[in-house]
Length: 329
Image 1 (cartoon, rainbow, N blue to C red):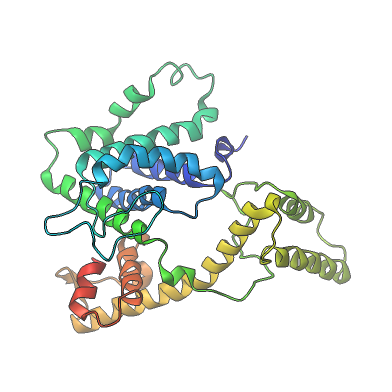
Image 2 (cartoon, rainbow, N blue to C red):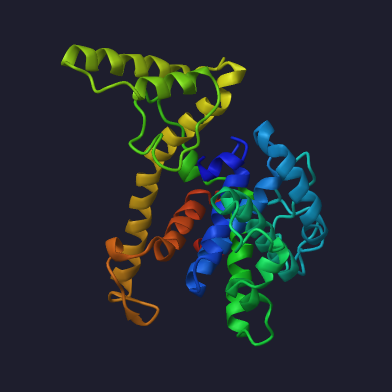
C-alpha cells in the first residue's frame, strides 16, 4: 500500500504530512524555516472558500483550532476594516494577521500527527514504534525539544516565527497570480504528471488514463499515434465546463499541473532576473558575502526571490516601490 493512500484524494492532509516530514527529518534551522513558511501557507488554506469537498472537514477543524489566535493577532495600529483582508464566508481574516508562538506550536504538532498517520502502515507490527503515544513521540523529537526548550537561542525562535507568519500571510492572499495566469488548454500531460508521489485519483477518466499508460509499448508508429490521440481526447475533457462530478478531482488536478508547468518556469525566470539584477547593483555580493550564481542556489535560498516577484506583480496600482519591497519581505 502506498503511504499517501491513508488520506482522502483532496490533498490538504497529505500536504500537511509532507510538511511535517520536512520539519522532523532534519536538524538544520534554515531548512526548518523553509518548511515552517510552507506550513504557515498551508494553515491559511483553512479559510479558503474554494476547497474541495474532501478537504472541508480538515479546514473546519483547523479554523476552530486557530481562530482564537487569528482573531486577536492584529499588530498595533491595524484596524478591523483593513482593506487588504481576505473575504471568506468562514469569517474575515485581518489584512495583516500575525500568528503567535502558541499557534506555531499547535500547527507543528498537527503536522507531526498527520505525518505519523501517513507512515503508520510502514511501521505496523513493529514493537519499536507501536506502543508509543503520539504525543510522547512528538515531545521526544529534536525539533520539538528545540522549539520548546528555554535553552534555545532567541534568534532561532524569532526566525521560525517570522517564517511561519510570512507563510501564513502569503497563504492568506492565495496562490500568487504568477502561478495562476490562465493558459490555453493543454492536451498533453506535463512530464511529471502521474509520476512517483502522485495519488491515484478517483473516477472513470483517471482509471482510463491509468489503463492506457499501463499498456505495453506500441508495436509501431500507427499504434503510438492512436494511443497519443486517445490520451489527447481524454485530457480535453478535463478542460470542459461540464466535467462529470465523478471526474472533477482528477480534472482539477490535471488542469493545475498543466498551469503550473507553464507558469512556474516563467516565475523562475523572473526571480532569476531579479536576483541577478540585484547582484549587478551590489558588485556581486549578497549579505556581505560573494554571491553564488542562481543555478547553484538551493530552493530554500531562491524561493524568497520568487515571493518577491509574486508581490511585485500583484502590487496595487500606484503603490510605491518602497511599499512593494517592504510587503515582499
